[in-house]
Amino acid sequence: MIPYGKQDISQQDIDAVINVLKSDWLTQGPQVPLFEKALADKCQASFAIAANSATSALHIANLALGVGQGDIVWTSPITFVATANSALYCGAKVDFVDIDLNSGNMSVSALQVKLQWAKQHNCLPKVVIPVHLAGQSCYMKAINQLANEYDFAIIEDASHAVGGQYQNSPVGCCQFSDITIFSFHPVKIITSAEGGMALTNNIELAESMKLFRSHGITSQTDKMTEESHGPWYYQQIELGFNYRMTDIQAALGLSQLARIDEFIEKRNELAKTYDEAFANTAITSLISANDCLSAYHLYLILLPEADTQKHKQAIIALREQGICAHVHYIPVHLQPYYQQLGFKLGDFPKAEQYYQQVISLPLYPNLSSDDQQHIIEQVKKLI
Ligand SMILES: *Cc1c(COP(=O)(O)O)cnc(C)c1O
Image 1 (cartoon, helix red, strand yellow):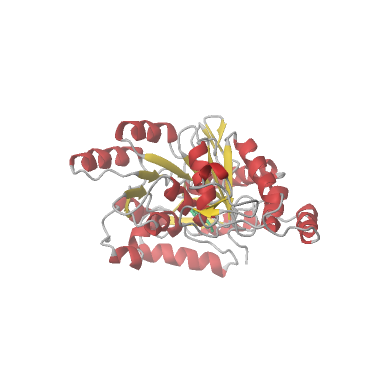
Image 2 (cartoon, rainbow, N blue to C red):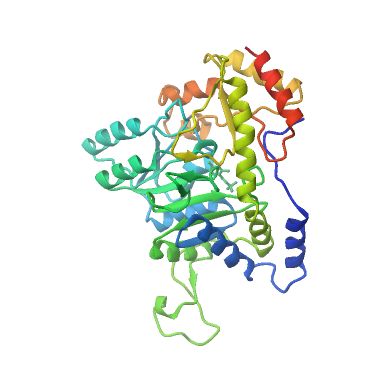
């Protein structure tokens, strides 16, 4: 079966991990700060805080922005559940903004309409989390203008987009957001097995995320409520978590980071081959915006019509041909847990239509040309 995504591990990656295993530090050693520094530099951000997953990084990002009970957080219904869950962890209420069917990303016009409505009804969000679906940045400049007008903070869920660019700047530079989150799960662009990172240019947010990452404990004397008792002393000043990344994971992530441009280039080449193959067919590929370099975590196509049965049959047919076609994503608001919170079918029609049409095709750096041609042939047979 050709998987939809897969890591690319080199001998150098393996050696990097082995070196950590032979060293004095399996965790809380030098590799995590090295990985953080390297990614912050790559993304032109001031601070990077590694965590044991993007989910944890999203959680501490919300906490650092002060999200709590009584607050409202908005995101896209077309994302992995973790994006929305991260706000629920803080006791906040979650709501969604419908997507733009051309890109699959949060629709800026829908966001604007919803903000006007929310202002009148006194229920504006504290934080909005745009998700860069498949690796293509949302229209961050426009979203940032709305953030200034309506006074909300922005967390970019860039789990798909590390290595990508928006308006000639790296995704993660936080020019138009407060915090950007990356994931290093093996299906993503670079991997640390499990792992995530939060980037920011704001030192207070960075310090706060560091506290929440490690039990709310500080060894910095200026943060303590009384004079330090001695060199062993620390204080817990927040209720934090153990969300730390290990040095084993960081060494793998750092080694992978050295090849990120190569990965992005290969993903873009493969995506171009798909684009060209489907250009004059009834299959629609999500548009690639001129001012973005997509990291192409995913290659998403839309079938010509929104038909649940045909959609299901298409995916089964591809799987019968050894192609592990997938769906990214089931709209979050339709998950049973979210329906219990009051969401229902019909709430976000574009996201629901998208769900009936979308197919995620295999895309990863070492996808062979033969396998890709096989995928293209079989997809064309669907229509
Ligand atoms: C993968 C993913 C996450 C969660 O990442 P983990 O590192 O597995 O916690 C969150 N948001 C999006 C959009 C993702 O694709």
